[in-house]
Length: 342
Ligand SMILES: Cc1cc2nc3c(=O)[nH]c(=O)nc-3n(C[C@H](O)[C@H](O)[C@H](O)COP(=O)(O)O)c2cc1C
Image 1 (cartoon, rainbow, N blue to C red):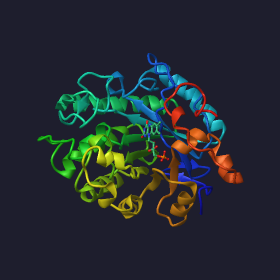
Image 2 (image 1 turned 45 degrees about the vertical axis):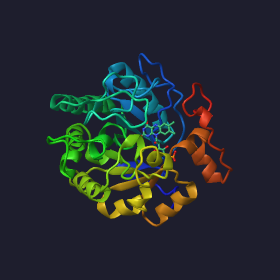
Image 3 (image 1 turned 90 degrees about the vertical axis):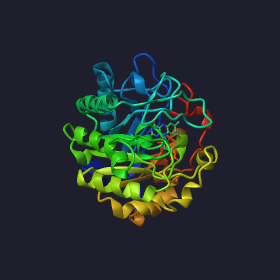
Image 4 (image 1 turned 180 degrees about the vertical axis):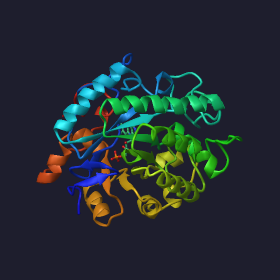
């Protein structure tokens, strides 16, 4: 078994185990937030860039979205083109939480600003605002379904809204959404329960980053927290999780936390026995590491992020053993097709 062995991600049949990880590329028109047709590559599965739920959940300029019919129609066209190439496509729903300068008083579990950062002071969400966000997930998921996507992924990693509910450094709430592990996981599980009314849970996934400290989100006891979360996702029959590993010292040095690896040395191995569904490994995984993780059955699929930006033809290159281009950081968040379609 290796990256090229077909597999079923939840109930999504993929021609290989190579995925493109979600990447905001800032290449869309700000006002309409309609996806550009440039987003093209081939892979077993493609996860879209994080799609904000509405205008209050935007982290940066140039995002695409799927909260209105016009956006959904544009997505339907992209989905059908990718299907013709045999790729499966999963929409990632995203709320940036306090990681924004775009929104005044952005929403967060608690009114805690990200340390040493330029980001705006957030406000603590009221219970009504939490319910509204859950409803917005539901409304977007209906459009995702209508656009013909194969699946949906909830972005609960990397310091954005849902990750900041999970981790105790950012969540000091005293109500049913803060405090215990159960309470900090509640909003994610309530979103899953709502999306299940629209999507088969086997077509649903959750992206997590148990040990990242990105944007000042830290929990001193990630083992207990994620054991509970994964057990609950299993109970709900969720098809897959995507796990972002973390080996970025700047994420802990900047915020004064201990090294990520001191919590859980191998986060993929830690999660494997805790979750019955499929596991996608992510985060500085090379193709060689990916093959090994699959062969040892630690992960079922691998999502590559930056490698795809310099190699949109990554799958063909790996198949034919061609040399891969180096990642060009200057094109990650720039405009234009370079680093996007070639
Ligand atoms: C330019 C850029 C934009 C990103 N945008 C998103 C995003 O919208 N949603 C998300 O979950 N992760 C996002 N990520 C993180 C990637 O999905 C991935 O987790 C990360 O790059 C690690 O994988 P890699 O080492 O293979 O690049 C982004 C990464 C980059 C480089």
